[in-house]
Length: 130
Image (cartoon, rainbow, N blue to C red; front, top):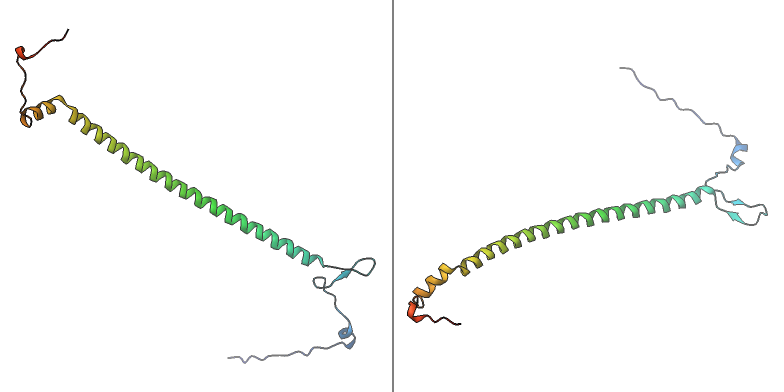
């Protein structure tokens, strides 16, 4: 195995360079031509614009999701009402069949003879009206 050695370098410091101020365009405030008013650095202004744009995109995304949820809910509502309509149509058909059965002359005649004891009249018991 080879032994690894670490080599350190010393840094030379220039005393004149330490006294110089390094300007950073991101954090410095600038002055206008009169020298009285400070103006924000352009990077800070751009950060605000980006925050507003990202906020707008976020709100637009939320609106899009809300619209999609409303569409899905409307679809479920339509499907539910279609199922209800089919059930009502089936019930209506069943009730029409029952109504026709209750109105049938054979059934009415059977009930009249068995339950009420009625009989068909003879020819002498009928009266013809003019």
